Length: 113
Length: 112
Figure 1 (tube, chains in turn red, cyan):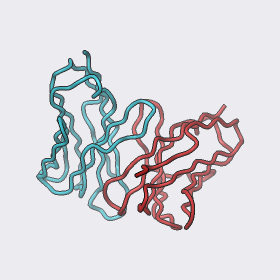
Figure 2 (spheres, chains in turn green, cyan):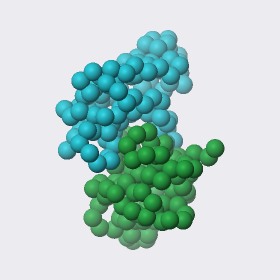
Figure 3 (cartoon, each protein chain N blue to C red):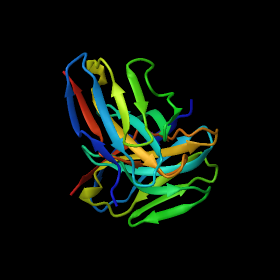
């Protein structure tokens, strides 16, 4: 009974490169959420997706960031032209229904050099 | 927008002591969730609450959904060193939409 999977666990990118973070939700879950966490801080909501649809992206920066959750395959959070300020831990969570318990993956730690 | 005020920010306690932390909001929430995060890991769901007044236990942990639906607390009894970590409250506000809001966390330190 696999939980939420995220890969890679650690990602190092140079400024200007693209970062792709992947998230496979728990089996049977069609709701995916992405959060960002800076050191010593809480979780900041970025985007909520349900298969093939973006439901709420109010927490996502308007530029350089995008997310998708295709019919087949994992959800992807893409950050283009990364900057040092993008360095953070990015967590994905999934849920069975839109409002309720969310289960988190282990996170991807992005470091921009 | 809605915010959750979680307190205290940090706690330093002796092994064996009981711990209490809480979250409050100015808005009504439909759901309260409590998570624990260990260093380098993702948050793990401890307790989920769905009804005002609901009191739920999970081992040494007890959480309650406040009767006003604007607050929740988490108690840990007889703390042990592995209780160390960051505890987050989270809630789904009663305003429609699907955004779950997280508190800033309570950092718990347990001295053996």
